[in-house]
Image (cartoon, rainbow, N blue to C red; front, top):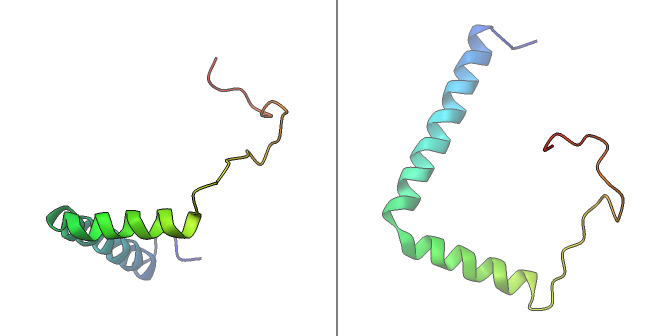
Length: 65
């Protein structure tokens, strides 16, 4: 179990640092974001229809009311 251990903390620190630096790089290069969005749209296709995995039933836990 790595939670609370030094190797677990080092891994969490590295993951947080990687995500933060990647986000900073993306903010500085909007052309990369535009290319990623274009690739996503191209791979997804024009006729995509979202269908919830729940189907037509209500969620088991209604935490919004």
